[in-house]
Image (cartoon, rainbow over all chains, first blue to last red; front, side, top):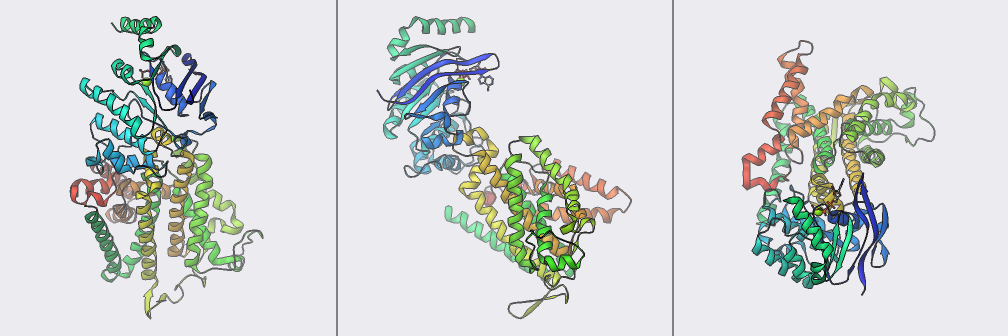
Length: 238
Length: 354
Ligand SMILES: Nc1ncnc2c1ncn2[C@@H]1O[C@H](COP(=O)(O)OP(=O)(O)OP(=O)(O)O)[C@@H](O)[C@H]1O
Ligand SMILES: [Mg+2]
């Protein structure tokens, strides 16, 4: 197994909160890896550490055998890591295609911004401002922006947020297709268990900043610690 | 579709050029000097727009970069002989030259101001939002004193007089011979010079807006985190925006020195910096053509206020009241109004913002 990305003993605190507590996991080249856990488990924080928006208090992040923590945040995308944001972070006053063009500026060759928009089915709104488009469309623009940068590793933070049941199934097929069409490795954060378990090659589970389980989807689903974490979550919610 | 949009743009630009060319023959000479002043402010506002409109970084100190441009031009025009004739003693190491024709000093003034912008921007951009605005305000406040401090080359409070300088085009005979055998009055000459430069810098601003750089700057304005995650380096881009906008201010300052035949510290008070921001807001942040309206506002409103009443303090109150009213009626400036009124047909003419 060659890991494209490995997160090694990463800790990140916010005041008294330990958002990531000695967390390690690997993302092998060409796989879809699920990263799950209840709300506040530290999933988005992990993304922010990997993309260098947050500095870890301890630990290393290695991409392709090279320390990623020496790469400044705005250079991460040129090293081949692109992401989407849980709450959508687009530039509303730019047109849809200009949003994608900013992403595309990080790479040379590959699909053009318009081709990527066609791929995600948004060529029709290419010259409209991003402001005012529906949430699902915004999520796809964000994805197009990430794809346009020609990444090797794609980080998706809750891509199914706001989608209905059928759309989630559709999304599962779409993400698998992405991996083939763009030769990607994908790290997926998602609350929809069916989606994660259906398309992931392996899954890591976080709870309160700690890694509590790892394995194939089948193994993880049977893991008592995982069941406990999610049941506890439901009890708390009830 | 794309061709139609390009056609509209080219037509708009051609119309703009035509208006600029025709205006002098339609107005008295007195007005020509005011219309030149509008062009000067238009240039400065176009520059501030790159920083504040595109990038979202507020500067309350761009009058300082105008001062840098104005003094660069004045000092280079006089040169060492001129400065010494005026009783000044510029330090030996300072390359002030032997006197340079006014138009040749413009690109140098632009570069010096751009350098000043970069030098200020580099450390200052570590500050965020209101703190950065305060730092730029500090620069504006300090500008007159700093100029007075270096009086061996700036002439201190009295400033530098360019009226007698042989390097001031046409000042002595008040007539300028231009290629083709025509003769222009000084005011007409200044008007054409200013607006030629203004149109060129307008096109540059438009090109920046639609370039990769412009997209990156606008991305920073809309969402910094997303910009960084997409490969846009904040420090580099903000410093570049600062430097470019200072370059525009430097050109405006240079032309201002030529139009006033002189430079004084009193010509660059804090008000000057605030006025540029006012002009930008009136024209519309992120707009381009409508910024002319902001420049018109800056030149004419104080005069209209004077005409209404000469009582002490009253013109200032009128100015303030009109400004407040305007911001309530036109929160997105004239540019925003035009976009709403002219709607889908011409919306492509103006870059979208907000
Ligand atoms: N910038 C921040 N400042 C302070 N605390 C933070 C910050 N970012 C995250 N946290 C805290 O770190 C913990 C982990 O947050 P994180 O957003 O990583 O969780 P998550 O697993 O993505 O949750 P969700 O499923 O709700 O998105 C939470 O307690 C959160 O409040
Ligand atoms: Mg999250």
